[in-house]
Image (cartoon, one colour):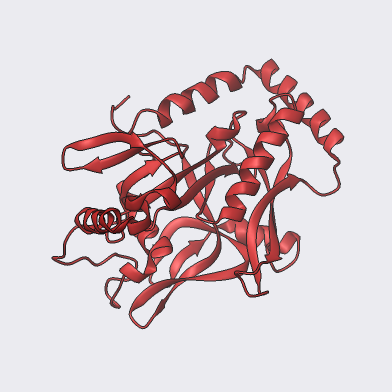
Length: 302
């Protein structure tokens, strides 16, 4: 295994709520009230839809608000990884990633391991817009049982709901999370911050028409069939665990432009020839600016 490179689950498509559109020379995220399933290929108009998007819409309502899925792994934390993350707004590369206790931060002397007080208690994080960042890998359909679709989010509601549901379903099924018949659901809610307008987040549940007890029975039956066929789920989970731990950051350079335009749209501008590509200039690095801002905050503190 190539050291220093995180080996992540194979991705064959993306799941998003909305899309990125071009407005006044900038690519900006535009929220939606439904899922969109895309391939990993873009053209000038954006991400190309995956055939499953059309198939699921034809099977249900025109608005895609639920997706039948299975998990790849029995370990909840392998299916859904979430950390406090600070990205370089110009390149989309990770600068600092932490779990609220410890963080990994890229500096002039390389990678440093430091205490992580969470964004609210970290001058460096406050200055750079550190926020929760989650990645969920799920299996849709039966064409590729080890190929996954990835959903990325910085939303607190989605992160809380997905993390809780995955751990709860793993617990009640006796660790058979990868065998449960699940579905992603889009839920709406209003908050004070949304000024009573609906905001949408992703939740996880049992597929319609099946109660939890029936889902657990189906999971046990599938687990027996898989073991009889020689399917080794424990080994698969361990291979994934080793792969994630093989690199300093899960994030890869090829995702940089997508991260920058989706989560830091104010820092990304485009022309008609360069749609989808972050444009950078000869400006101070994000690290320099963050360190200056963090220093100023510390000096100004009483």
